[in-house]
Image 1 (tube, rainbow, N blue to C red):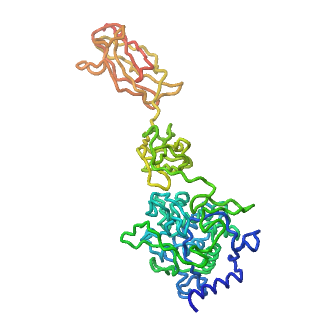
Image 2 (cartoon, rainbow, N blue to C red):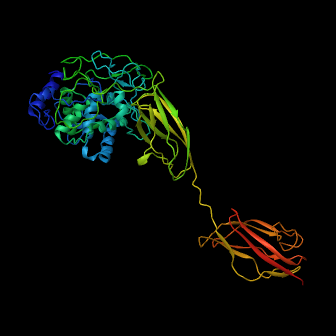
Length: 549
């Protein structure tokens, strides 16, 4: 029996027995809905997928490769790690969904043959781009370019990209950073697996519920054949898998996404040959509303909400806004003090080829650089939509506690259009010490005979609102009766080098300032010592009396 015949027999047996997870009738649907009752959403891809079914032999329950059914249960190491990492991540962010990594493996098998047998580097990025057919309306949907060719190498039409086959416009909405490198790359299996998991869990789905599981898979591709193929691989993988080295996974036999084999692996932007499958150019044959996401949607009363049309434009929406430019509006540089919020927000205007403002453009603001600054919720990225004037205003920016400069980059989602703003966080200033009163600590008269030393030292205390004020700067100056600096009379220091003014004085931790010893010269009379706080807010004059010997 040929491989195809064996696969067909396996599928027939599984379908006929209605094995767990393989009943494709939706909850509450009629029998006729087995072939036509798809949810009214499109999928991330383009209907180009591999149609092989798992072998009749099941892998060993313990995943022992020595007892596995052929090589079909082998999943490349990095690809397998990406699926399991995505499952763990969803357990933390959306535990109610119950996403099994085996579902990602099943979809990855059908979409790209597990990234073409695990042809990925150590970081999980495909060695060569995996591209779906050109979506120019010839055999597949017509989706004009949404990413300026950034992901698919085609600036005219879109193509599904990467091991999980995301159309660029879908990736712009659902793209994820699964490996924590700060980038969202549809060609990276960690990023693509997490994005696929989040997409499958959309709409508060519980994948332990059969109807929700069916809806999730059909949302990826509106084809009953696709649903049956994915569910058959899901059941197969649930019975056991084993890990194989990257690059040694089983390659698919059927047509599917193409691999650019030119040196450097650059996307060519040229259409792949459409796969020839029963029922037409695309799996599943004719489907309600057309062969591709974006056709007319059948009425489905009482259906749970589904994600937005990931496979391209929602048929009920207007043509998506296209922005070719992003202009800075208002302040290009903003400054805030550590621990506060920036008083203003960054603003940019989305414009089209004609230079006019474009409404409804998604603009992402990303914080770049070493900083503790964040958007609301502690996020480093935030996406906003341009208004009728094309204006996209960033959310409030909190400075954080770290001083320094950083960049805020505004980018049009899904396009290589961006502009950079500058931001600076200044150190938080410590409050300056204040004093509202300065008094002597004792009331003893300050007297001395001419040529002698004043018997008592001069000591004062500064307070603010009744409490000792430490660190208050002061000056001490000998002045005449009319307040001018004195050239005769009492002085600080030695007779040979008399000093009549002292600066850089400060009160101690108790708000006390004790002045050096004061000496009288030959002049007799009443003199003044003037103490003034650093900010000039408080002045204290102290009498110094010099008498005849």
